[in-house]
Amino acid sequence: MKVNTQSVNFTADKKLIDFVQKRMDKLDMFYDKIIQSDVYLKVENTSDKENKVFEARVRVPGDSFVVKKQCKTFEEGADVAIASLERRIKKRKEKLRAHN
Image (cartoon, rainbow, N blue to C red; front, side):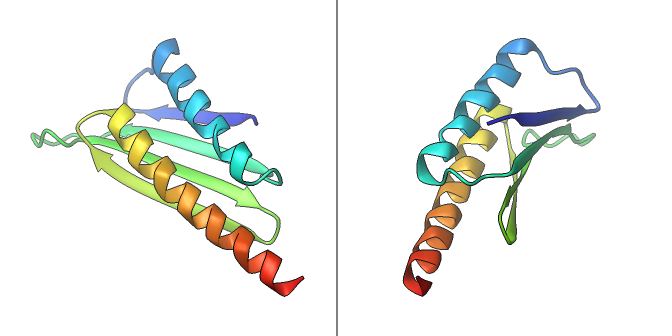
């Protein structure tokens, strides 16, 4: 799956982008009809340690999921957000199965 990754207020290194790509690819195991996925990595200008925002938007036929997590690191935010997306995608898949 192609993941469009954008970094706001900083330049993401290749390692971080590869990490996000690898984690997002796991969503394909749960649902193979994902149309598009966009990831936004933002650094908030605050003195708070949890200033990294990981936002993911995943489009599936007839629906779209958006998850936004704020953590100390992008890796932590990615793990938490993608786990949440997994649950939502599984739930959507179950609903579709129930209707057929």
